[in-house]
Image (cartoon, rainbow, N blue to C red):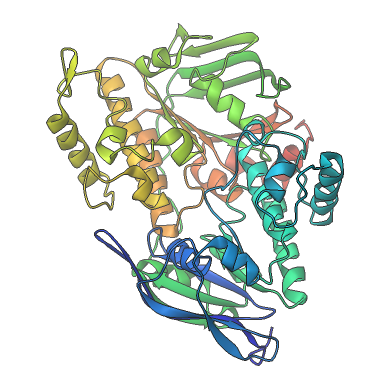
Length: 519
């Protein structure tokens, strides 16, 4: 990409408001053909809203969108729907998936396309999709239903769906948030190839190293405004982090040696199947002790989801036992795990973590509604529920207009803070009842900005220091090396090895993730 390349799309003075929120405030943005243009900002800074305006999901209150041709001439356009955007060559991969769970991968990829015959030859469609996935090195089970595949595989389907439509302006909202470093590198290579063909790429990401590697230019949004547009070669990730947050951001975690206590969570010889009936955990044995963080590394789809569900009572096991603080809870219902002191930060914030349409107060009371002061006999005291939520909002610095705000209206980082507030508080109650708490955190920093990541990591370290047994599942190897006391690597539902961060390397972890058993 050169400075003389024609402009593919320009946004001028875009302003968009929601009740109580100024999401975009007079934002300008230009993206050139053959350019990978990164869009950075904290959760809630207005990035996704700006791109939703560009793709017709939202209508701007003020401002103009202009599309450029190959000569660089710009013409104003009105985009009132995603169909209009597609017609103009604009495609978007959203952070929150736009997939139909009860349809197959291939059906989702062609869903809504013009020119699809009434009677489909699905065998031919699946072959085309399989060829596309092979071409872009994004393997997906083309005949599987969406509800049967992992979050990482669903993200690949979204990327393939956009590529299948051949957009000239391709917008990707956190496309590598759920991918391994190797898969992310493959996506980066794909984007480079597409940019080399003259396509304009808008790349929304919170991974500063990734942005510095992949992007040509970066625009930083803060509180809905464009605070800077810079060439990647003229900046560094520390400066970008400061532009995003408006202050200096800590890049390391202070973690004391801690006092490791007895085993609190023990998973012994567990065999469990996934939603497709295939064995996903094979004779799995793990222990998590009080006051330690056991990190789980592995390529997406190697048993992480099934492990978290077994450890929280959400999935039955065929063999083996699950013990919490000395109590055998094998195949007991989730409420028994909750009563035993197990808290759960799920990988899917809006799918399992929160009920998006319900007020934040209802969501934050989901572990507290059965006990006083919220419970008054068989009745719920909504005034006390709101007060309870208000206290957690203040303590955990959740940025929201109030406890009556629907959870779906919060940014991803504030949704995660709300979940952590609820789950950590539940762990505090467990400790008051004489139980040793367990916190299962699945991808807790996925898709978050640097400021929110700093907050989440701090909360997890505080829980460890307080004696909680923490099971941390993450695709970020640097995060696991920084946060964990021990790291277990999963491959094919089996443990390839358990290592101390100080005694291993990322390269060794990568080999175990690829299936090499540690000797």
